[in-house]
Length: 198
Image (tube, rainbow, N blue to C red):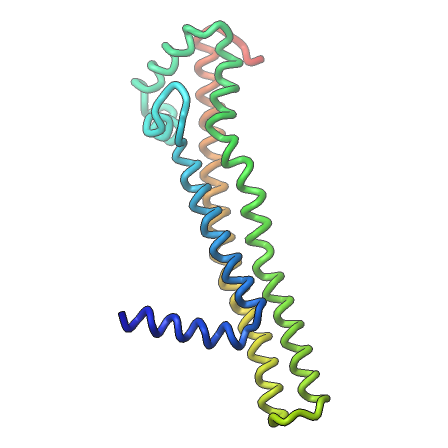
């Protein structure tokens, strides 16, 4: 119980020095985390058609290593009037959710360092305002507040932006590999069923 209390106290200290932009970055960090968890979940194919989510994951990770799943999918599609269209619909249902979410996640991640940069500018304004104004506080105290605000928001923006960009890029590369494997499976299936893609 002591550790959470210390973390909360430290967060309040940093937050009071970083100003409202620091708290905006904290909200953005939670939104990015939620978005990345949604992408991770989407790549596990909830509500997958024809096969179970586990079977799709197995087939798409190793397109040539799951002959039983491939045979089952082929048997299901052989009953379809238009296997090419059926495969297109399956692909849309598997990947539409992640295709929609990746651009939004990258925009939010890109915003973090920019909000941090805005905090730098805001902190510099505070610093120069403290240097030029006649205030009751010592000038060094006002200047140090402004520099603290500038540095803490910049650092927070980078700490949020860089690791989450790496995670999102890794998820995107995984998504792209799964899509590529789906197209390979699609070609094999259509070849076996004697059809050509629409």
